[in-house]
Length: 322
Length: 294
Image (cartoon, rainbow over all chains, first blue to last red):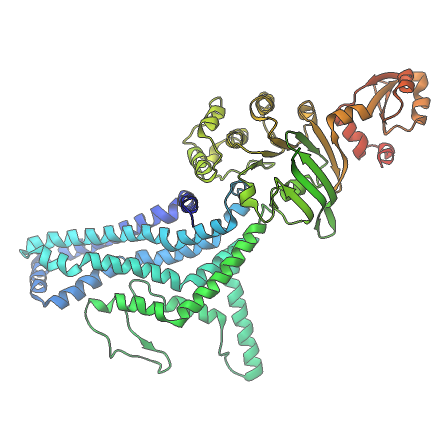
């Protein structure tokens, strides 16, 4: 990978940013704004019921006396949940972005302009994938940082009013550098975990004659229905292997940076809470992140993704305006 | 003399239609080639094959590269404009220029600005707010600012006013074209390009019916406006095409003895448009010319 390749990738990724300002800039800005708006409204309503804020300030003073690990647990929970909506909607937007990324320019014929530039089809596919896995999450991460900072600033105001030290009560227990690093790494591991689904959408986007997102959903849905129908007819039971459910499971067991870190023992059909520690580690931590990287399912998924991406590049090479 | 395009038995089928049917082609560098044909004759398919935008059977080399496998490398030296403006509609003018500059090593911003100087295009405008003509102007400015060896123009001036068309072709000839470059043009406005072409190709049903230099064309085809009393005589010589203008019969001949033709009437050099009609067969005619051309 030469310097020229890096420059080309950079230019191509900037193009994606220009093409989709709604997905990259406005959506995270609006969600962050709404989140903060609802927090302020909730506080204002609270202030109405609690004249002079007596109960609120009392609660803050009590909170300041709590043991350190309890404060860390609470702050991590508050900050994770304040940015939860951002990262959940991000996944949805990534899916729509990927479904359209190799389709839109075929539809409006601008593919003829893009193909007149000395950029290989592999490079094009790579730029769109990296945009979805790194660039797009980066914008939502920045929005999350801003939400976290504003939440902490509001808390600081309340803390000062309650006469507690906001640094030791709110800021230090939040451990922002650790929190942000774990979320950032979490987004990367999550992208890697969802890579087969991302690649499937790009694959459909590269050849679908119209509405690639519907085609991307209809194919696994149709296959699962056929599987179900066949196995109900042949063995009077549900199939052991179902592509649609496997794809849904992939989402369910993904690690949106708000998922609680509990190992659910699915064969025992009950949640196993024995190892759960009630500390900030409950939400997300480095060891579970890297634990995901050791799972064989992770790397099987990556291999499937690579095959689908090669398919997307193959179709892209043959794609023109009709 | 090095070949810019070399094709042998170039073939492309869409189902049962033969978009290209065994085309052999040699285009040396330093030429301006006009590829002329009716709609659906295979012009666009031929251009797409040359640009690596479609798969094909047979041999094809453009600047020594295989277009379908090495498109990205080929595009360093080839520029093209498709039949309608295809610039991304969501982009702003400065973004399009910026992207081309970043992605094309042979692009010169100064030259692009020079060509845009005389237009009404604003840098902050979005492409979708530009008129059709302005989009074409922008695209032409981008393409002419690239130092390419082969320029492919598919109906480049469609939808442009006559002033801009004139200026475009004069720019193309005076400022862009030189011995090192090759220009391949398809257009319906034959009369506008015929005096700048060095080579002429007619394509019909996926086959080249004419492939020669303009000099050869001028040497080979003659048009005779027959004297009223010599019409039957001229017809007997087996012209390619016959038409009537102001009551005078005009015959188009392929390499007949000029001496004897001179006696039949006035001799003219046929225009490309007349030659086109003669060789392609006028589908609106009563079959007379069609049979003659076949």
